[in-house]
Image (cartoon, rainbow, N blue to C red; front, side, top):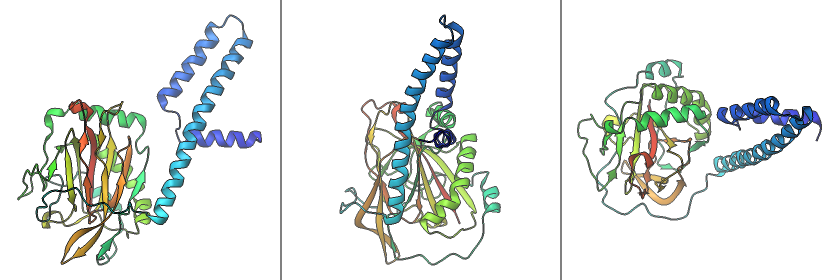
Length: 328
């Protein structure tokens, strides 16, 4: 390979932050230590450089291959939006027009986002929605993910039982046969950081989903903790009058390492509207929770969370998500 190509390739990997800041600091410390303690002079230092270069190169190639593979898969998904053939929604009772959600009022940054959004006419809703979504991996920087996780774990006592309709919204009820989880309504500065990242990604998200830009009048966010046996049966995020203006939903996945649960898949259902009510067609797409991954989809789309299996049942081992909704 031409040396210029090698430099371009390594610079590209650097720009994509394939190595975390902690890994970079560790390598720098090793190099400094090697030069300070080597008794055999430059020859041994060069040997250390060669060994480290080979090891780092193998790690970079492995991670770069994974990143490239994810990009290719995502491009294929966005071009064809395949569905997983037929699978019914989770069994169980279906109360009339359930809707999830948070919060008593708009996030403080919603006005700023709205001011920067472009207002245009909204199209009429279709009668069929395919299970389309946009997925971004490695959404937050490593330090940001660490701070969000620490913030969440320190506030275990502030979580409360989820309701079928938003806490603080008239008519909200606890229905353990339909939804089981706990929610934290106050994200503090973590919510502001998340919304800044979402705002940056929003033009690409809207383009991929085929949604025209819209004026954002309100933003809702919450952290959801799902532990052993928790789930949420299929529902739409804007099926009730109080939350009917939700237009775009996002779900950000995170958890403590090592991952101590499985299950808790996000299932997006192909949906058909009949007599003003969305119903699943039997085709759906599965999103397996992955660390530091975010998913965007239209709020009308029926979706569900399959049961979580967390053997320890410890709060810190839960499946955590930042859930949010952009209102038009």
